[in-house]
Image 1 (cartoon, rainbow, N blue to C red):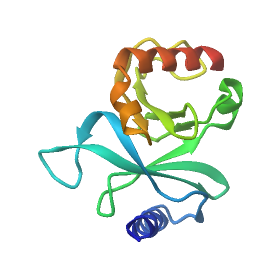
Image 2: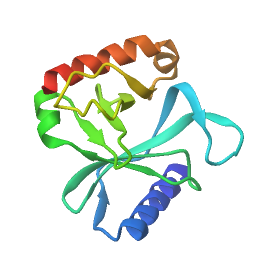
Image 3: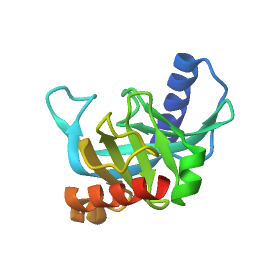
Length: 159
């Protein structure tokens, strides 16, 4: 029930803020974070859990991340050409953040140096990096060095 409400809220927020045709292609799923991030719901604290959902907006595949029903969702658009080259889904936000779907349950969340756009150069510096997983133990077992090495390897595939 709570996930259904979260799904409806995420859809409503996106539809009203974007004014675009939106449909979901998956149910919301809880993801655990390797490193806690600043909470939108509890100012001054952090969160180690969020929700993600796949969808489509005006024909474009999207990846939605939100902390919960009352938090603003972050929307990432699928980069079709780069995803094909890498052999995995890569999503990009207007803020310069990337989500790389390692598989259906594990995701790299990255903000590479703005001087290193994907597909132009091999990534080497990250302003931000985190790992999301539907498996709590897997999220806690990953290191920043491991996830950044994976991201660098993906950036090489896309060149």
